[in-house]
Amino acid sequence: MTLAGSNTDVDYLTAEKRQIIDACPKCHGLDFDCPCYHEYDVEVRKVRACIPMKYRKAALSVITSPQSEKPKEQLASYIKSMTKYRKHGTGLYLWGAEGTAKTYLGCAVLIEALRHGYSAYFTTLTDCVDNIIRSRDAFAYMLQNTTYLMIDDMGYAYRPIRDEVAYVDSVLDKVVRARCNNLMPIILTSHKNITELALANPSGARIASIIKEHMKRVQFTGPNFRDTIKL
Image 1 (cartoon, rainbow, N blue to C red):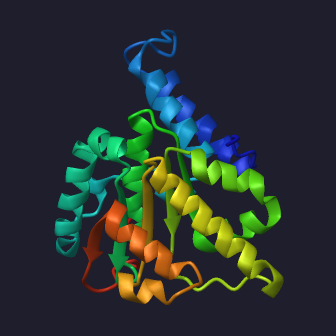
Image 2 (tube, rainbow, N blue to C red; image 1 turned 180 degrees about the vertical axis):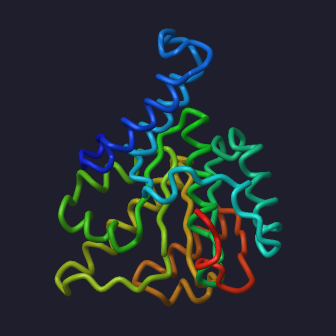
């Protein structure tokens, strides 16, 4: 993975450096061993992981809705035992209604993985499919080898160019199987339960089977509060 080169990301990291390192009350940016440098390194790695801007400050504590308490408890337990789950390749399947903070809280877990020193990568299913078609083996290699992979909107029924359907399906199958065989955790979000996911796209049935074996399932319930939460 390479550092994103957009002006937005450059501006983001410049601002973070000023706030974290230059304004550090302990070392004022002069001590490379100061925790502020580790904190800034996590911000750099968020950019490299392609975590969207709106989720780069994601944390379990930010979401305070009563409907999120149970999912947050489950995710907090996962983070607390992340080293153990990483060793066993156990990932997460976050599913439920639209607008219930699945993506936000999934990114909070991904950020904790970065803080633990693991590599990570965020993508949506549609972007993943587009990148597989464009980059083929190079992108597939990255998907297989980053320690924590998060695929958002897994229930979306992708429809690539007809001639590419079989190729995309085979690559997704290869990536998921390779990661599970090598104990590499995956975080998936979806508005579908496992039965519905199995019917959502060509790889659905195989991925649903893998979810049952390799992922902790966390259900999100309640009304859509996307318009009321402050991210």
